[in-house]
Amino acid sequence: MLSSFFDLLTDTFAFLQLVLFENVVQPIAFHLGAGNLLEIAYEGTGWLLVGVIQIVVMLLLIAPLEKWRPVEPVMSPSAVKVDVIYTLIHRLGLFKLLMFFTFENLIETGFGELRVHGFPTFNLDAIWPGVTDTAVVSFVIYLVVFDAVNYFIHRGQHQFNAWWALHALHHSQRQMTMWTDNRNHLIDDIATALVLSVVAKLIGVGPGQFVALVAISQLTENFQHANFKCSFGWLGDRLWVSPRFHRLHHGVGIGHESAGRQTLGGHNFGVLFPWWDMLFGTANFSNRYEPTGVRDQVENGRDYGQGFWAQQKLGLTRLFSKYPHS
Image 1 (cartoon, rainbow, N blue to C red):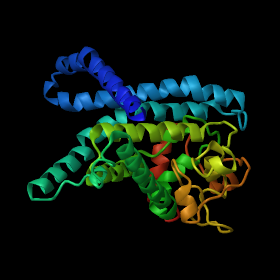
Image 2 (image 1 turned 180 degrees about the horizontal axis):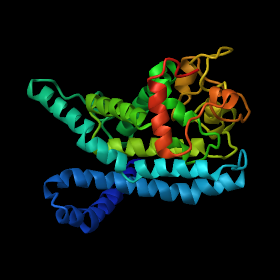
Image 3 (image 1 turned 120 degrees about the vertical axis):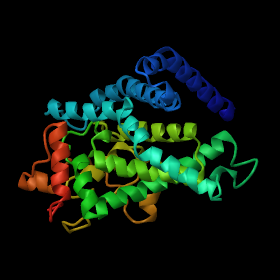
Image 4 (image 1 turned 60 degrees about the vertical axis):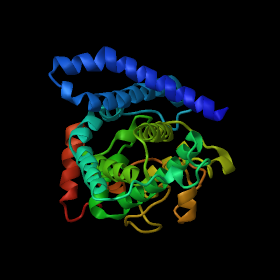
């Protein structure tokens, strides 16, 4: 039954993608003289459709929750509006378009060359034929693997000065909302996307599965960042990352520092599952809702920028600074 429902969702999405492509995207591509890029345009249509669905879910489901039980009043709507810009850039396919024509094309070419020279194609979902290669089971396997990879990416963002110099932008939002998830430096996003794309190729994730994995992770992260006072209880918070659990990760002096020291480190790096934090000793299940931001921003008034371009520029300044986290 679950498998049939999963197939229904897949078929419905494929139908909508085809309709959108044939009636909107393909005519535009031909009009612009880009008929040779229809394969990329079709894949891009899938990402665009996913982004539109995500935004609709955010507005219809998550936004009312923020109004129902907010953690804090929104005192700076202008800061939230900048986060909306980040979200639209990512969810409407602009960032993905950049990746298609640059780094992902290089990755595809590189793996093609490896296959030509005998590098085997590995599929993680084929390790137990008849079980792991079913749609639902294989998707769950890939979801868990990707979440583990995301955990270690997130640890790296908080561990290495250069990476933190970029990732600090994400933590500089003092008014966390459902739009905050995509508030990242573009170089930080490129680095993360590259790692995930390479992992997807190495373990044999199909294009459709990859879109679904990213989409579910992103929508979940929108909910985690929401200005919504919510935990899942003692057990639930240990099964799935809640807004309370993730807000602690953004807490000043908690989420991005080692215990008792103003050095890089922190807690609650899990993206979907808190299991990795529990396993590696980085979980903090304190039942409180802390103010968010970066210590040097709050205590020393360090400027992280008010607008999109200012934030991107200051990220580069921190990257090449001797003291990016001071």
